[in-house]
Image 1 (tube, one colour):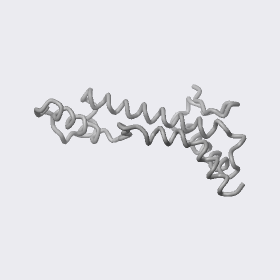
Image 2: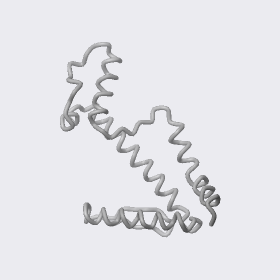
Image 3: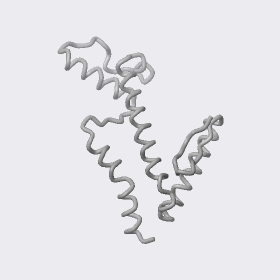
Length: 138
């Protein structure tokens, strides 16, 4: 399959996902809790017009004690999980039409993920269903 056909296939599979991500006005996947903590404190102070009295320079561990920052961090993780699931389902949802070069990259990626999961999460198993959807079994 030529490079142009591979690009066409990828564009067809990922267009709606990418447009959905780009179209979100309040899209933020910041994962560093200190940055999230600072932005939550700053937003709260701007909204209220008074200082919160909380230190703006907090340690990584200390940021998780702020309930608002922790909730924002969890929202970011949930959004990342949702987008990752959409991407994986878009890629594996059409395995039969997938160009060979892309399927070989996906196969290597799946092998690397399985190896990592086997090491870190030995009680979980990553599988591919007959529809091409990835799932995690315990």
